[in-house]
Image (tube, rainbow, N blue to C red; front, side):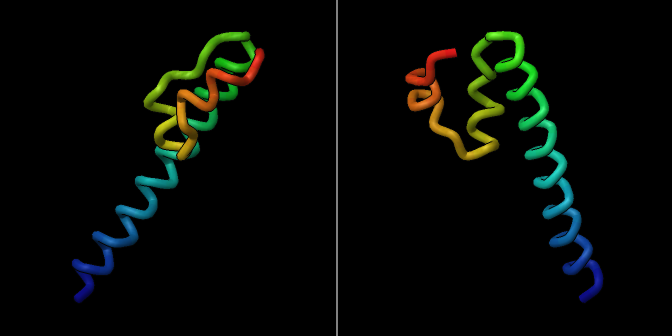
Length: 56
């Protein structure tokens, strides 16, 4: 039972760190007037094609 619980919380923590890292990368790209990486936008749940419509 505890192994299952550890796997669930580890998975949650991993996703949280991935989302935070993607947010940092995407915000740095926007600050530097560059297109964020598709991978970072996907992690954040943002459609890259929709993001292309935003004028930077």
